[in-house]
Length: 132
Image 1: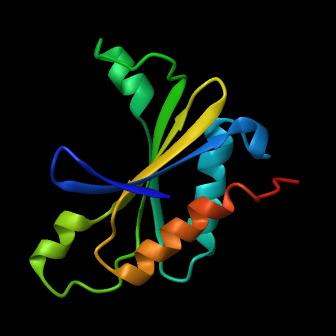
Image 2 (image 1 turned 180 degrees about the horizontal axis):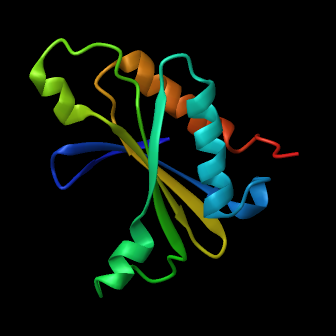
């Protein structure tokens, strides 16, 4: 995974997989993979899938060349509310972008390191996941 600072302030983790490296190759299959991971986690709660691509297209917004689909898997790890500000960091979102030959996964760093590592593990395991 590669960490970058997006817009000079957001710590974003990204990984790109060639479709030839994966058994799940469409946005919908990758979304279902993450939904399964979330549903099987002891504290994670699935919230929704946001169709970012269709939303942007319907607004007449700009979409980068080559992008076929873009979805956000929205969920929450929150098991405590120690401060009002924690709600600004929740819920979590994993972006799934599909291109002709690859899938790109992006997410912002989680406030708790151990839960951030869970998201990294889920994402890295995507490459070896067998949907059969």
